Image 1 (tube, rainbow, N blue to C red):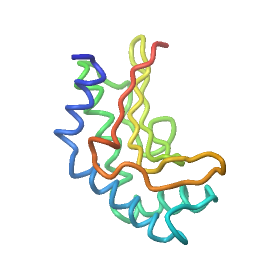
Image 2: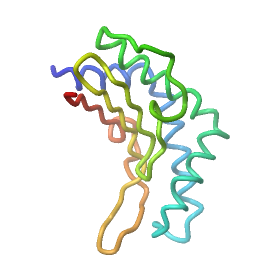
Image 3: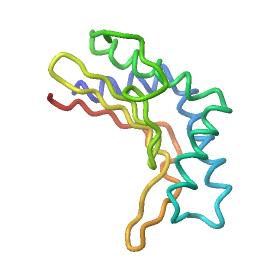
Length: 139
């Protein structure tokens, strides 16, 4: 089993409820659009971040990063906060990042997808298993 897969399975096992709440917040944002998509990024990122805050999700997301790092047997030099560089809410969803010894850990909860020709944002994966991706990138 790869390290990424081990981290992914650990996060799915330990944070399923938080991942489901994140998906529910994305559902709320998508329901506010006129139709099944929007062409305006401002109808995605800002409303999603506000919904995560109101849903008591955003401040809990750094624990996912702490646990993912711990699953590798490593630690973070400082307690991560729900802000860059540890957490960024992007147009596809929350992205958690940590610099480790020799690698960069990136955990993405993809709740939206970007379609092209024309560019539009749509609701993405509907389950934690489909939404969660983990990558270790060499520094």
